[in-house]
Figure 1 (tube, helix red, strand yellow):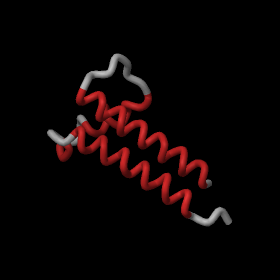
Figure 2: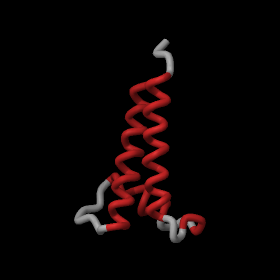
Figure 3: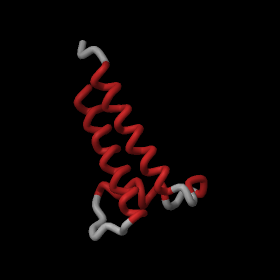
Figure 4: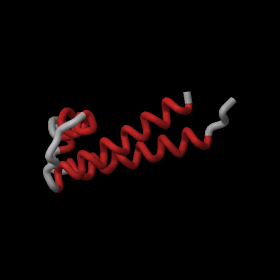
Length: 75
């Protein structure tokens, strides 16, 4: 279960960084990593004007998830 949580954290970090890069400098490709950016950050009115911050927050939460999964006891 720890590996699944760590994998989810890695995907969150990559998705957040990819979304932030997409807002700063348009990426030449749209992949699975930009799903959060395209479906959530750009469409939720609460995040309007804060898309870069939203994506970087997703990356930080993913890093926290990875760290929390590493600190838990494997038993």
